[in-house]
Image (tube, rainbow, N blue to C red; front, side):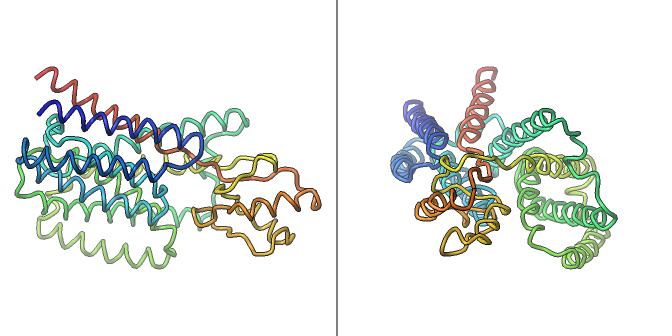
Amino acid sequence: MIYIEAFMLAIVIFTLCVATITDFKKGVIPNKLLASAGVISVILDVIYYFVFYDSGLGLFLSDVACVLIVAILFYALEIWAAGDSKLLLIVAIGIPSRLYSFIPISFCPIFILIMVIFSLAFIYSAGETIVRSIIDKRKIWKEIGFEFSAKDALYVGITLIFMVLSVLLCNVAIGFILKGYEGNYVLLILAADFIITLILIEIRKKLSIKIMTVISVIMLIAAIAFFWLEYFNLSLGSGGLLSIIVILITVVIRMLSGKYNYQEISMDRLKSKMILSMGSAIRINMSHMIDSPLSVTENRKARLTQSQVDSIKKNAEKYGCNNIVIVRKLPFAIFIFIGTIVFLGLEGAYLWFI
């Protein structure tokens, strides 16, 4: 059995290596690579779980289901690209479930891996922001929005209340789901809180302050009802305090990582699939440099086509436009790669000492 596990891990590591290289060089993860790795991994899974380790099939299926839900949500909310979602799914399919033994969790331990991956990405993004702010001689407290009006303060306050109540109620639901399972689920709940917070950060961008206020009031009433019925003992206490800390840290780091998200490049470096900043797109639309207007949404829907790039470059000199500002793309495959290695390293360290 150990040989097929080694082969499964080799496929995962190889796929991550190639995906990281192509993501850095071309900004994409080839579908052929992911499809090939997926087919091989599924074949190995069938052999592994139906011949060697049938007792791990349930854990494997729960992990894959969790990753599918998270990947689809992250893609739909434009937290990352489709290639990153597929790559994470390959990792979930490829890691043998017997290697989850160091985590005392019998339900969706893959959440821990996702938390490790995003923690690495957040730490890098926040660190890069701090370095860039020092280079630009700006105070970091200004970058995270401490200079705002009373209206902004109200919005931030309602947003935090909305997110805290949402996460705590989700914790109650998770507590009910896990009630029949054995083990300590504090780490799992914190990982789930981290993922839920990421999703809520994107959802709140689509909600007005009035809608968030109404939803928060409804959730507060529900929270009081749960507390009265003594259901909150599943999520409050020290675990609830840790959840709130996770929310606050995630929100602050997300705010930090959103700064310096732009890069000014010369017009000759403009390529297809790049995304223009809102200001650049509006300026091009107003100058009529291209026939059809560009999207100003700064998401994957605003990726430039080759014809748009050719048209912009053709008319750039005419309109005196030598430089342009684009949205900086953070290659995410490297974080999935390093996060997986860290995760497997923890596994190996545990198995070495038991």
